[in-house]
Length: 245
Ligand code: NAP
Image (cartoon, rainbow, N blue to C red; front, top):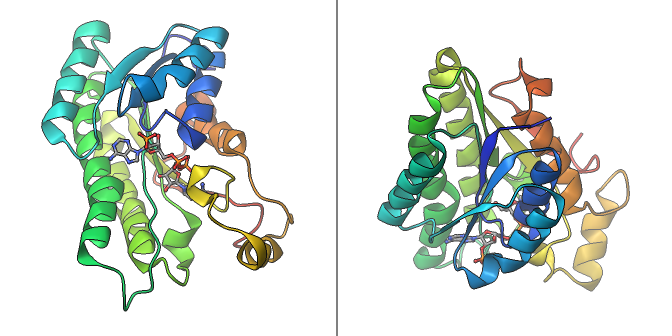
């Protein structure tokens, strides 16, 4: 499905990013895996190599704009283009609105919003010459519906929806499709602190009555990157087992 396509996945060290990198490699893509250090990307590197082409690695903190720019130049030098971007790196810190500290809100916006925007700017410069390319941003069902204790996270993920739709409008004529995926509750490190009654309450809200797997989000990302979705842009696709209907 993605033979010969060069695709960058941010936050590929674990969770949804790792599952996506592996699935894209299986689908024939040349995957560029992004991580914060060489050490934390090793597991993904081995998994990707096991199923497809050896990945190209880029290492930076997504809040470091100049490092992101340097990585973009390295991608340009190696491949001369970029066909797909999965803007997956993200953080969630909870706290009731009356208590949550400014630094916590700021750091979520730095990673979940500013870095996503900057990554799109850099990627688009490598995509403009392509006939078609695709960007997939990872939002959240919380960005659409809110959640107690998650106002700042919700705001950051709602911003992802706005920037996705705006970029889709700006770049459609350049052949760049831009969509978002809004996962519900996916079992990864990000949700591993949910326990007992709190987890049960979430489960009771999911119509399919089970939590999601990272691979089930990756499947939708693959669809949005591939030509199977050639007429889809500016959309937010929920992957939530019917949590929001
Ligand atoms: P995860 O397992 O916690 O993984 C988060 C990834 O983001 C890691 O690779 C992490 O790298 C990377 N990252 C975080 N901050 C970074 C930074 N400053 N610079 C570089 N990389 C950074 O989370 P996940 O569940 O897979 O989530 C992936 C995306 O899906 C996130 O955007 C999240 O908000 C979204 N999402 C998840 C759920 C869910 O239920 N899991 C639901 C809705 C949306 P390190 O390993 O170096 O920390």
